[in-house]
Amino acid sequence: MNNTSPHVDKTALQGKVALVAGATRGAGRALAVELGRAGATVYVTGRTTRTQVSEMGRATETIEETAELVDAAAGTEGAGIAVPTDHLDVGQVRALVARIDRDHGRLDVLVNDVWGGNHLLDFDTRMWDIDLERGLRMIDLGTRTHIITSSVALPLLVRRPGGLVIEVTDGTARSNQDFRENFYYDLTKNLPIRMAYALGEELKTVGGTAVAVTPGFIRSEEMLDHFGLTEDTWREGIDKQQHWALSESPLYLARGVAALATDPDRARWNGTSLDSGQLAREYGITDADGSRPDIWGYMLAERAGETPNLADHR
Image (cartoon, rainbow, N blue to C red; front, side, top):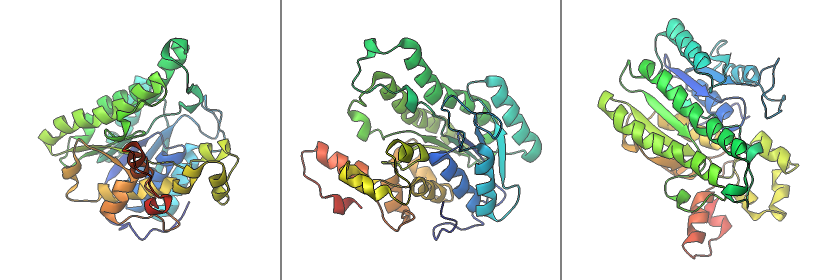
């Protein structure tokens, strides 16, 4: 991960505390690092540690490593705090929030990024042909975790005005008008968008903000492995899948969210859903390679019957 960023003021979130639920890898890890780079103390949670592995079976990424990356970005030991947490276990989430309250007495930013359901996806399969427990597990991982975490953490977050909730999902209210190819996945990725809207209505009464955000075609560790690529060789995938040309590193969304978190006028986004391309344009963000991919804009143009140029969306 790029250890420098021209986009972040390292003192912007000084004294603030963030919780990134689901920070083991991908967007969650990058979000934790960029919030730390902006000066926040960041609690990073997940189920994979150096001594245990979640059902995803990816032992190569751990929350301890994420915490160390936060420290490196912040230039401060202890800026990243790893706490093993299963966000479906209410007791574990309560213990986590109690620890944050005991040690810091505040929570300023809550990022709900828990997912871990890619291995449950059955595309081109009708709802009634999918094993019910498999489908419900996906909904639990991607939505029930968010609800539990918000319910437990929000009393601490609203103790001070200005709290921010970020719901990380796949797609926006506009882009998700089309069916997401799997009944359970469609529900799982649309609920966080509605959660941001509903929480926004409630948080604005106490000076808070809730926003849903989505990456585009993200080159997470899992995605790169799936295609047999690395961050150094990802362009080799363009020949097989043209949308790879508009792919983005996890840093891209993370830079946009860090900019949003430090924006004194962020309440204007309350209740909305934003993609990484929109955040990039609004805040002058680029990816690590200086590009500004906009795959959602490209796909929306295709939906409208246009023939967009890939180069115009990068």
